[in-house]
Length: 250
Figure 1 (cartoon, rainbow, N blue to C red):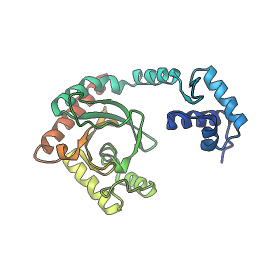
Figure 2: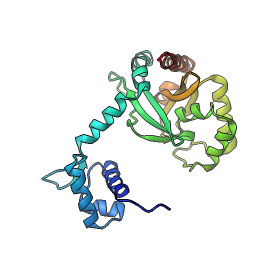
Figure 3: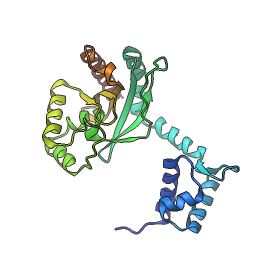
Figure 4: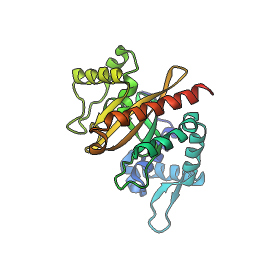
């Protein structure tokens, strides 16, 4: 195992603060296992560089605005977001549901953008930057259905399978039957497999034939699954195809 560097430690502290929302020095010692002197030294550097700030009243540390600046620059440089934004807006207006955009990294789905219907009283929120397992998400299953079976098998057998809900796919035969159905119909369905009461319909996005992301609509299962499911799915597939075309023309 590689020896942990000073940079590793600083990033671990930064991630611990991000995870907690705000933290005192003692909480960071507990979270990381580093000595107080080490934590204090790291916090001083992160504060100086504006990645972290300390509330004078509570003495708690939170992420600094420099993190927001870096995040916004990353989003500005992801061409899939630029290509998808107007299509996502139209999909939200057509379906009335939250629209999500993801990239795939290290065999996880990472939410990179989202548009919610502000007029809806029931909205689903998945934080931008959140990672979800491929086998428990609509976007992930849409992606895996496009991969060679051997790759999907290796992924599923090595993945940490957590029963998030009673509908989480834990058995290999059930999972691959789901992928076959996804492949046949051209879109994936998440029937409360990651979160109780929340459903998802998803389709992949490709650039010149290579999958580069996926999009989905998410909302209460009672709204997504019923007589209008096929119509909603058709809107998602059309939207994903439109983004794929926009990307391939660049």
